[in-house]
Image (tube, rainbow, N blue to C red):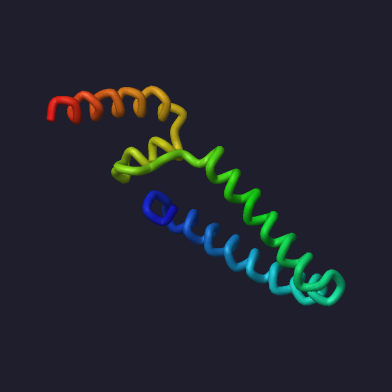
Length: 97
């Protein structure tokens, strides 16, 4: 998000990252003590797997897009129209080569 956001977006991303690290550092020792290493690892592994599935399902592809196209993709409802037109234009250019 640093490539397309402003300072407030970057600040929010930094806060969320550090807050997540803080929460994990608070809950890991009690989990290890009460559930053991294997169950704690399984819990974190399941969370990572759910995050991976979310990423594959809902994240938009950004390969080959410039900054303006990324802003349209993430911040505009006109994304669908402009992105379809943009991809059609790029595909035509690639076919010509």
